[in-house]
Image 1: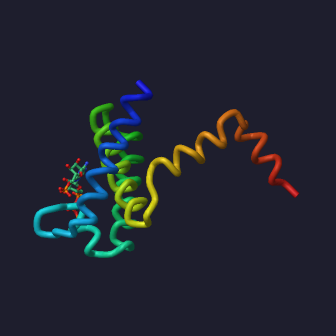
Image 2 (image 1 turned 30 degrees about the vertical axis):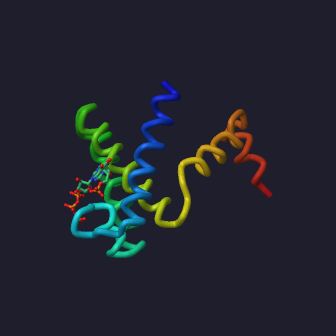
Image 3 (image 1 turned 180 degrees about the vertical axis):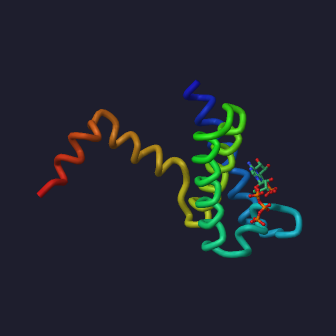
Length: 110
Ligand SMILES: N=c1c2ncn([C@@H]3O[C@H](COP(=O)(O)OP(=O)(O)OP(=O)(O)O)[C@@H](O)[C@H]3O)c2ncn1[C@@H]1O[C@H](COP(=O)(O)O)[C@@H](O)[C@H]1O
Protein backbone atom coordinates (compact mmCIF):
# COMPACT_ATOMS: atom_id res chain seq x y z
CA UNK A 1 0.00 0.00 0.00
CA UNK A 2 2.68 2.51 1.00
CA UNK A 3 4.68 1.71 -2.16
CA UNK A 4 1.55 2.28 -4.27
CA UNK A 5 0.92 5.64 -2.64
CA UNK A 6 4.51 6.75 -3.09
CA UNK A 7 4.50 5.63 -6.72
CA UNK A 8 1.28 7.48 -7.45
CA UNK A 9 2.58 10.71 -5.91
CA UNK A 10 5.95 10.34 -7.69
CA UNK A 11 4.26 9.68 -11.04
CA UNK A 12 1.99 12.70 -10.67
CA UNK A 13 4.87 14.92 -9.60
CA UNK A 14 6.98 13.78 -12.54
CA UNK A 15 4.31 14.60 -15.11
CA UNK A 16 3.59 17.94 -13.44
CA UNK A 17 7.29 18.85 -13.56
CA UNK A 18 7.42 17.86 -17.24
CA UNK A 19 4.40 20.03 -18.04
CA UNK A 20 5.82 23.01 -16.13
CA UNK A 21 9.14 22.65 -17.96
CA UNK A 22 7.48 22.36 -21.37
CA UNK A 23 5.27 25.39 -20.71
CA UNK A 24 2.87 24.50 -23.50
CA UNK A 25 -0.22 26.21 -22.15
CA UNK A 26 -2.31 25.30 -25.17
CA UNK A 27 -1.78 21.59 -24.66
CA UNK A 28 -1.59 21.20 -20.89
CA UNK A 29 -3.83 22.16 -17.96
CA UNK A 30 -0.78 22.30 -15.67
CA UNK A 31 1.08 24.65 -17.99
CA UNK A 32 -2.02 26.79 -18.56
CA UNK A 33 -2.59 27.09 -14.81
CA UNK A 34 1.06 27.94 -14.16
CA UNK A 35 0.93 30.61 -16.86
CA UNK A 36 -1.73 32.38 -14.77
CA UNK A 37 0.75 32.69 -11.91
CA UNK A 38 1.40 31.32 -8.43
CA UNK A 39 -1.56 33.20 -7.01
CA UNK A 40 -3.97 31.37 -9.33
CA UNK A 41 -2.45 27.99 -8.41
CA UNK A 42 -2.80 28.84 -4.73
CA UNK A 43 -6.39 29.95 -5.32
CA UNK A 44 -7.16 26.58 -6.90
CA UNK A 45 -5.70 24.79 -3.88
CA UNK A 46 -8.02 26.83 -1.68
CA UNK A 47 -11.04 26.10 -3.86
CA UNK A 48 -10.32 22.38 -3.93
CA UNK A 49 -9.81 22.36 -0.15
CA UNK A 50 -13.22 23.98 0.27
CA UNK A 51 -14.80 21.47 -2.12
CA UNK A 52 -13.15 18.64 -0.16
CA UNK A 53 -14.63 19.96 3.08
CA UNK A 54 -18.09 20.23 1.53
CA UNK A 55 -17.84 16.71 0.12
CA UNK A 56 -16.73 15.35 3.50
CA UNK A 57 -19.73 16.92 5.20
CA UNK A 58 -22.45 16.42 2.60
CA UNK A 59 -21.49 13.87 -0.06
CA UNK A 60 -20.57 10.23 -0.47
CA UNK A 61 -17.24 8.46 -0.48
CA UNK A 62 -16.73 8.69 -4.27
CA UNK A 63 -17.26 12.46 -4.27
CA UNK A 64 -14.93 12.94 -1.30
CA UNK A 65 -12.27 10.79 -2.93
CA UNK A 66 -12.53 12.79 -6.14
CA UNK A 67 -12.26 16.12 -4.36
CA UNK A 68 -9.30 14.87 -2.32
CA UNK A 69 -7.59 13.88 -5.58
CA UNK A 70 -8.27 17.34 -7.04
CA UNK A 71 -6.78 18.90 -3.90
CA UNK A 72 -3.66 16.72 -3.95
CA UNK A 73 -3.18 17.38 -7.67
CA UNK A 74 -3.33 21.15 -7.29
CA UNK A 75 -1.11 21.05 -4.20
CA UNK A 76 1.40 19.06 -6.25
CA UNK A 77 1.35 21.81 -8.88
CA UNK A 78 1.83 24.51 -6.21
CA UNK A 79 4.76 22.68 -4.62
CA UNK A 80 6.39 21.99 -7.99
CA UNK A 81 5.99 25.59 -9.13
CA UNK A 82 7.87 26.57 -5.95
CA UNK A 83 10.58 24.02 -6.79
CA UNK A 84 9.45 21.65 -4.05
CA UNK A 85 8.25 18.08 -4.18
CA UNK A 86 6.65 15.37 -2.11
CA UNK A 87 10.07 14.16 -0.98
CA UNK A 88 10.38 17.32 1.12
CA UNK A 89 6.89 16.84 2.57
CA UNK A 90 7.59 13.17 3.26
CA UNK A 91 10.82 14.09 5.05
CA UNK A 92 8.95 16.56 7.24
CA UNK A 93 6.28 13.97 8.06
CA UNK A 94 9.01 11.43 8.89
CA UNK A 95 10.67 13.98 11.17
CA UNK A 96 7.37 14.41 13.03
CA UNK A 97 6.63 10.69 13.24
CA UNK A 98 6.32 9.47 16.79
CA UNK A 99 5.88 12.93 18.31
CA UNK A 100 2.40 13.36 19.73
CA UNK A 101 0.63 16.44 18.43
CA UNK A 102 -0.47 17.19 21.96
CA UNK A 103 3.11 16.97 23.27
CA UNK A 104 4.37 19.16 20.41
CA UNK A 105 1.67 21.74 21.12
CA UNK A 106 2.50 21.73 24.83
CA UNK A 107 6.18 22.30 24.03
CA UNK A 108 5.21 25.54 22.29
CA UNK A 109 3.40 27.00 25.29
CA UNK A 110 5.28 29.80 27.08
N1 LIG B 1 -4.60 14.80 -11.89
C1 LIG B 1 -4.86 15.69 -12.70
C2 LIG B 1 -6.02 16.52 -12.56
N2 LIG B 1 -7.00 16.54 -11.61
C3 LIG B 1 -7.82 17.54 -11.96
N3 LIG B 1 -7.41 18.14 -13.10
C4 LIG B 1 -8.02 19.24 -13.83
O1 LIG B 1 -8.13 20.33 -12.93
C5 LIG B 1 -9.16 21.19 -13.41
C6 LIG B 1 -9.89 21.68 -12.19
O2 LIG B 1 -11.24 21.65 -12.38
P1 LIG B 1 -12.09 22.95 -12.12
O3 LIG B 1 -13.48 22.64 -12.53
O4 LIG B 1 -11.89 23.42 -10.73
O5 LIG B 1 -11.32 23.95 -13.09
P2 LIG B 1 -11.84 24.91 -14.16
O6 LIG B 1 -13.26 24.60 -14.55
O7 LIG B 1 -10.83 24.91 -15.26
O8 LIG B 1 -11.88 26.23 -13.33
P3 LIG B 1 -10.97 27.52 -13.40
O9 LIG B 1 -9.53 27.09 -13.30
O10 LIG B 1 -11.29 28.17 -14.72
O11 LIG B 1 -11.38 28.31 -12.19
C7 LIG B 1 -9.96 20.40 -14.43
O12 LIG B 1 -9.67 20.89 -15.72
C8 LIG B 1 -9.44 18.99 -14.26
O13 LIG B 1 -9.44 18.23 -15.45
C9 LIG B 1 -6.28 17.52 -13.50
N4 LIG B 1 -5.46 17.76 -14.57
C10 LIG B 1 -4.36 16.98 -14.70
N5 LIG B 1 -4.03 15.98 -13.81
C11 LIG B 1 -2.77 15.20 -13.96
O14 LIG B 1 -1.82 16.04 -14.56
C12 LIG B 1 -1.33 15.41 -15.75
C13 LIG B 1 -0.96 16.47 -16.75
O15 LIG B 1 -2.13 17.13 -17.21
P4 LIG B 1 -1.99 18.20 -18.36
O16 LIG B 1 -1.13 19.29 -17.85
O17 LIG B 1 -3.39 18.67 -18.68
O18 LIG B 1 -1.35 17.47 -19.53
C14 LIG B 1 -2.44 14.48 -16.19
O19 LIG B 1 -1.92 13.42 -16.97
C15 LIG B 1 -2.94 13.98 -14.85
O20 LIG B 1 -2.08 12.96 -14.36
